[in-house]
Image 1: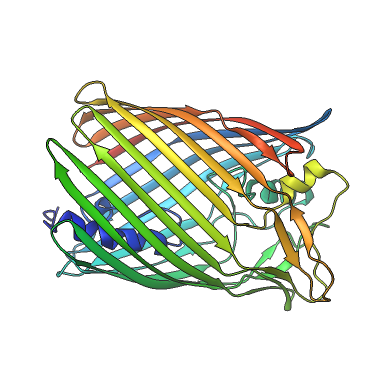
Image 2: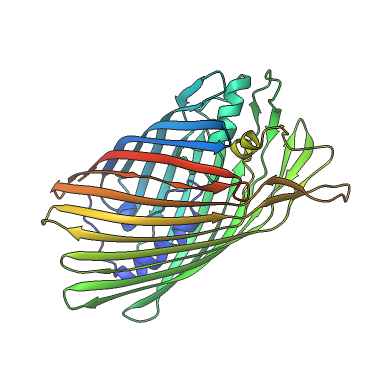
Length: 403
């Protein structure tokens, strides 16, 4: 195993601050991603109940994620593999479940010898199912709803190719800055071609993005203080179905900031995210899926919106190897309106929603290379401008192995 590099934290932190936004996999890159060998796996379960009057719908998902990171013979080069098995269900869709692998992601990271530039590239292999029946289409749409926050929010799509470059530089012994750019090219695939609510041949639009940020770290007595801030801009191509333009997603600005104080016995962390979306537009004769049930409209509304998130956590070190963390996450999602090409008033796909999620996590480190963690949360809130009550629960347990 190659020895770890001894880059200054501030530079590396700024570098991966940029890389975390650039990563199309949704998994934030960390310093550990480019040194050492690690494996992470576990089990998660998340379930929601949506209620309005005497009607209710339940959406649940069980996942078994696996993530492996390993250094390659060339110094600075690492390979990260990620896949997951997910079993999802929507009560009311004939109580049917959709259980299968999701698409698998392979990512290469190369940190140059000067430790100022990080190259990332990889692909997402279509190992997840796309030939779905009518009920499975309902399930796949429900788990992609951003309000419900499922970990595996899609099963199968086409081949994706992605790449990015990020650079970082020190401003002084505490502050660093970073920035980068990248993109994702998406191949076409057949989505539920024989289902009445399927689409057939889908050509998703590609994505391109820019990111920049700053990072701060300072020692204070026996502890440390950290702060990170990042601003990114993302643009999306036009989605096509059966060679026809159908949807153009609005551009996206995102501002993310985090910070913390890490002492001998206590650790405090805070996180905030603000995402602003441009106008979405249906193209040609495309229209959204419609239903008479407001509950079903909320469940199937998988168009993204502006949203804000705030999270705070307090960690108590019970022993040198055992931590307990209490956290609170607040999320607010704006109403989703989509423009129509005929100039008529926009279509409201989903009203606004808000979710509050208190949680508790315990972690125990057996040694430097082996740790376990488990936690649960009880999210609740409302959707459809307060007309629908949301309540749920979430559980996870995992094992981390490092060498």
